[in-house]
Every structure is written in C-alpha cells, then in structure tokens.
Length: 328
Image (cartoon, rainbow, N blue to C red; front, side):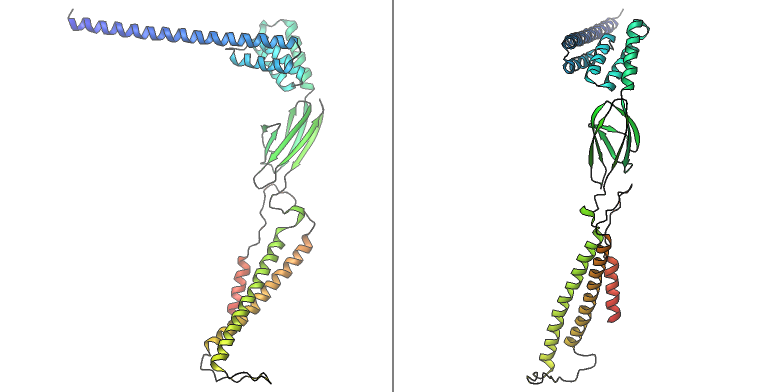
C-alpha cells in the first residue's frame, strides 16, 4: 500500500473519531438536560401535591402548571391533581381540560374507578358552565372577555360561573365594557351596541353646527367687501367729484369715460359681493337653525358600518361663485 493511501485512511479514521465523540457529547448533554427537566418536574409536582393537602389551591395550580411545562410528556397523576386544584377554585373550563387530558394520557391503563370518577367530574363541571348568548354591534367588533379574545360577531360562549367583564371595541366607535354576573348552569343574553364616535355627545347632530359656523363665516366676509366698497367709492369721489355740499349732502361728479371709472367699478363689484355673501351666509345660518331644531335631543342609532356625518361646503361655495358670476 502506498504511503498516500495510508495517510488517507488515517484522515478518515480521525474524522470518524471526532464525529463519534461529538455525537456522544451531544447525546450525553441531551440526556443530562432531559434529566434536569425530569427533576424539575418532579419537584414542582411534589410541592403541588403538598399544597393540595393544605388546601392552598391557587399555589398548587402554579406548581402543577410548572411541572406540566417541565415534564417531557403527559403524566396522568399530574393532570389529575391539576384538575382537582382547578375544580376547587371554580375554574370549570380549566378543570375540564385537565381531566380530559388525564383520560387521554391514562388511556385504558387507568383504574376503572378512577376513570369513572374523572368522567363524573367532567360531566358535573360541564353542566355547571354558564351559557352566554352574546349579541354585539357592529358585527366586526373586537370582543374580549376577562382579557381573552373571542371571535367577532354574535355567538354563544360557555364561561365559568361568576363575574366576567366583556370589552368590545371597533374603529370609529366608542369602546364599551360590561360586567356580568353569571349563574352556574344558567343562560343569559348579553347585548353590547357600540356608539358611533362621530355622533356628538348629548344627541346633537354635527351637521347643523357646521352649517351654522359656515354661514357665520360667509356672512362675516361681507364686512370685508363693505369696507373695500367704502374705500373704492371714497377714492372715486376724491378724484372725480367736487366737495360734498354740507347743507344738502349733494355731490357733483365729472362725467364718466366709456367703461366707467376703475374705483367706481370696484366699489360696485364690492357692493354685489357684500350683498351675495350676506344673503348666502344668512341662508346657511337659517338652515342650520331649522336643522338643529329638528334634530336636537335625538340620538343617532349605532350602525353596523359607521358613517361619518360631515357637511361639504363645496356645493355651497360653488353655488355662491356661480351666483356672483351671474350677478356680475
């Protein structure tokens, strides 16, 4: 055999030894980790059982839950004791889950008397659950009960007996909370209808408010046109007219050139604009007052899909411009 073949065999042997050593170390580490988890689960389980014997149910649940998380597989004794602790605390749903997990884990190996006992527990706990017929508006609202999310929309849910807090929210709606006391084995209707956030408090519709404000602004703009009109006519009189007669108030002006004087024309235009804006603004204010009188005290019903009530000033502005253009 040539020397290079020998070296090749040596390299293969070394690589195999390194790989075997790596696999061995990994296997040992995994075994140690699994052993640590088993020991942690055993310690939590023993503390949980001791707490059950002391009737410290809430502390027992914490220890047994920790044991369940650390255990590599389901342990029937752990699940049975966890179910007992939840049952004592009135956590019907959690107890049902633990007992059903026990039945599945124990399988046919469970003692017949213990299996019958657990099945009786499950039936009794299931019968003691409260049934809630939940009706929510809008249908797409986010629903939470005691901080846990539910599916959206109208539905039937089963909950432990006792007090529960329902929280419902949706975009552009006011969130609402409702606390409900549920009796074991009973049925109760819970209806939560959110209010549209665009509806003004105390039932005042926003439309007339916007109309009143807009009309006031349009009417107030006539003051500016009146001031400009006075300035234009004053400039015209100063340039083209004799001083006004103090006794009669008469004034004599020079004849106007074709097309009229610029200041005089400006004053006439400002007069028309002042009259138009005052009229449009006054009409808007009057409409807002009538609308407010018709809708005051009435609340808008919350809708399945919220609609924003707004006042579009574009038609009014467009109409005003058209009216001014027609006058001019």
